[in-house]
Image (tube, rainbow, N blue to C red; front, top):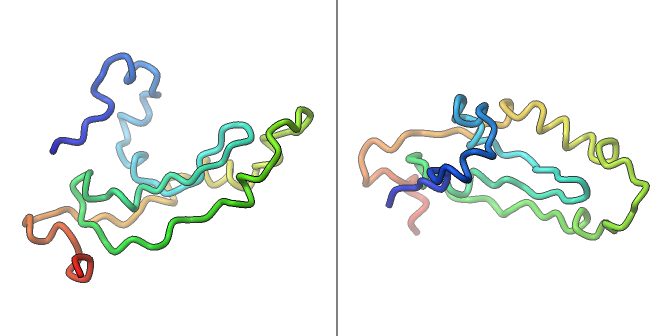
Length: 115
């Protein structure tokens, strides 16, 4: 299986060059903010697809409180409202997950993963 979701030139054209020049950006675990929507980029849950050892996954971050926010708040200053999470995004390279390359296919997971 070859993980190549961004090989299509049409898709690639809308992705900033920064993310192809510094591939570490694909492995950060941060909240993604788009106006009133906040979602966690759970890169730690798919490390094996990028050629790294997969540790036992922790429970996904629950953002239920964030999902209850009324998106019709027309006069909300979203950048200020989400400033904490935007700052995390700005510091995204501080949130790169620990990655160990797979050396031997039997070591694709940490030993405790399979049970």
